[in-house]
Length: 104
Image (cartoon, rainbow, N blue to C red):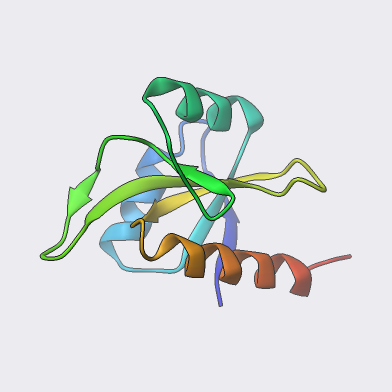
């Protein structure tokens, strides 16, 4: 299951990079401005009801890794992590499961 943590600063990329390097399943909660800026910076790749920033952050032997973003439409909360086109649907399902488990 995914873990949800707040970004330690508004510019969440350093947190996301650390999470990616240590291979943790962490989604960072980010503010709406950061989410919107990421959506606007390059043409997005829409995937799993979210989007990937159109330029890859890294490459594995088999696929590209992108900054991935998803917004909970019911609450407006925004989340980010690094993921691939193929992995993002599973990552989003795990995030949704974590959100359901933490409903007050």
